[in-house]
Image (tube, rainbow, N blue to C red):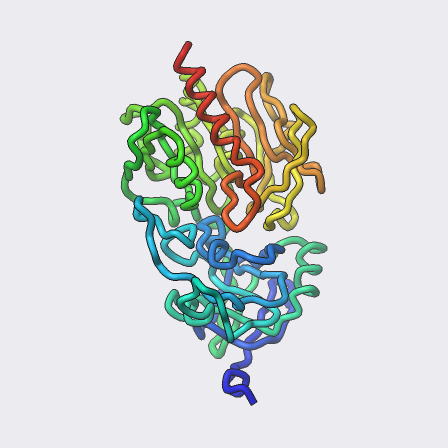
Amino acid sequence: MNFFLEKRKPAKLVLEDSSVFHGFSFGYESSASGEVVFNTGMVGYPESLTDPSYEGQILVLTNPIIGNYGVPGLERDENKLLKHFESDKIHIRGLVISDYSHNYNHWNAKKSLSDWLIEEKITGIFGIDTRALTKKIREKGVMLGKIVIDKDTQIEDPNKLNLVSIVSRKNVIRLGTGTLKILVIDCGIKNNIIRMFLKKDVSLIIVPWNYEIFKEEFDAIFISNGPGDPVRCVETIQNIKLAIQKEIPVFGICLGHQILALAAGAKTYKLKYGHRSQNQPCIDTETNRCYITPQNHGYAVDEKTLPKNWKVWFYNANDSTNEGIKHNIKPFMSVQFHPEGKCGPQDTDFLFDKFIEMINKSKEK
């Protein structure tokens, strides 16, 4: 018998509705709790686990085999960003999978998924019927839960916290040597968004979520992705309200999209089970063209509450929820999906160029 199977330790996933799913522990052996969500992507677990937007959540991966290509190394690029990860640490509270591949093979792999989870002190459970679990979440909505190994733990609601304040950088970082200066509000920004900007002729001033932005000199503002309920980002919303009054160009992605909408006067709401996948179809209302997009969000903009002169730019072809807004006249735009899409399609990466064009047009006035 395989040595790993002989040593496997019983564990269970308990949901707030008292449902119990039995499996086995891998990774760090400690109980954990959080909001249970699912992602349907077939690949990209190194990127997903390090995505700050998953802060406070227990992540269910629906692909049946996980861990087969291991985990890459910690090489950094010329800007000191980790090449193969979206941040410097794992942000999920726990990982739920069906079949764990303890044998891994990939030219870039340096360690197993289980060893990585142990290093980062993240709990994992395998042997779960993820199809039944995902069906339950789809039917009943996301719910709180806990992974129990040995010692029990209380179920805690991460949504009561300001998760953005946990994942946002604490210091100002300056990158790039370009002529255009973009102030980046870090609500939990992914590394590949930074890389996409640095491919352009821009300089980035990356600041914390609650930074006094108007003491800096810049040409435009970008609001990043991030975790949790956007209404908790009070300081960020207030800053964007002032930016709108000053007609400073603004572009937002994911949580940044929701923050721009709130600053404009619209409302947001929580989705039943969110969009977390690499293949969400989004339709551009200006061209009627459909793009396949990667997404990771649990909240959405209520397009019915958009103020005058704001319009729906993109909508989801699956459930018709809002996926983008823009102002009819002024330089403000945002999208719910991720155009930078590492481990997902980059069909919409032209939006970064569109933002640069918008900045240049604004400077000409």
